[in-house]
Length: 547
Image 1 (tube, helix red, strand yellow):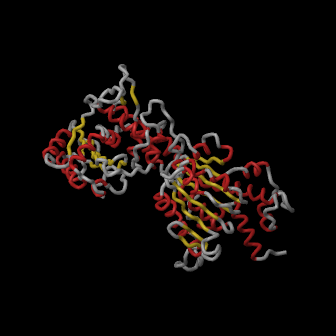
Image 2: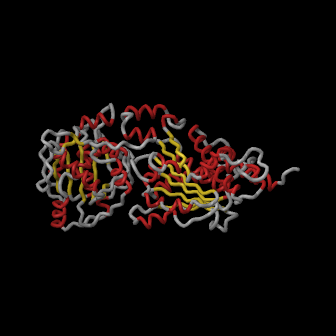
Image 3: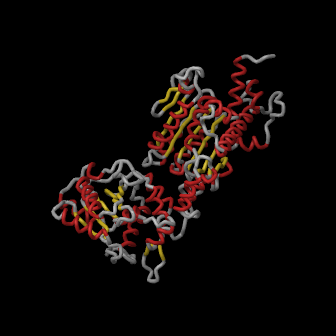
């Protein structure tokens, strides 16, 4: 007896449900590069879905004979497709925990998984979240749009034909929904949910709460940056027929829900997949070589960005990696009385010169400039001071810095911007702390450490700064003074070529003086900084002069 068109359709989609890789290949016709790592991911996803559906068949929650004929289960004549011990083990899993190096295609996999769920299951709900709105809009939603466009043509003979996913689904800034079914986006959709980092735990828990459906998918991108309360509703929500959570992350922390799902005490409830960039077809061998040359293979930056392994917590680390990650996502709004402080580290024509701007606890994106002409460097710094009008300018007075600071003192002698010099080798200036410092540099770094420790600082997502802070260590001192390892050791930890920790030094310099002293200066001047005085715009990882 031949199958009807409807039966064929149901069997095809039942097959797709337990074989996501086949759906990906048919939907994108080879345009999605199926790496070995992606193959493992989609195979595990298929096994998880098959197990949950077979258990549902056994419980009588699925009774369609065409679906049962494909997926199996302990009902009817399934020709060897009975439920197995592995199925029962997988059916109890919450979902997939994917710990990843960089550049291996994790965001593309997340977007394609969302489209798979939307197309294959009836009346699905897909919830996608990330630590920041920028990650959702600039990364995940951009990938969603890309793969919607890349789907196979509705009419393969017409080069102008729209893609199948374009035809079937409406894409908006924060929501995707089926055009023809699902009550105009109320019952068949994917939605982006932004997390409020400053909200209380109860409010954060509402991010993924309140959904109970047969077919539901949660995707949490950059999951290590998501606070634990956000994950709380998952267990209560994942009670439907095929309810799955997928955590995808670069393992930047040592603890937390996402880390526990993969490396900690919660591993039994998750399927663990690790994407090592060394093994990825999408990452060039040249890039891996550069990373290995820039960082020691045992270093935290290499572990996180290449191997997909969490950082090691080292007893002599100045600032633990979790503190750095917290400061990256922390949102601090300065108050009007906070002084605007600009600090400057002179690269002396070898390394880049770097400027850091801060108001209160908010550190703005760094700017850098590389030149071997000291007069051009003076002009660059002078223009920044004129444009941004900081209350205080703190500059490196050693080497080339002596010339730069001398010129700036003359230029701004009668300005509201007060010029202060910093010499890292000088004695510490603090007169109130019980701690004895090896030198002024140690005191400045100690101030930075206390800001991270007490959650009083927010920093830009700047790889150079993060790497430099992560390798800066406390040194032993025979007199018991607080001391930081010498810069040459930091350079060695950073790279064989000796890159200087410019951003970290500039940040420390910004905290070389007590803010209270500068607040008095601002009060005396009766100066009320405007937004334009301290806003730097988008974060940049490189020198900005040519942009």
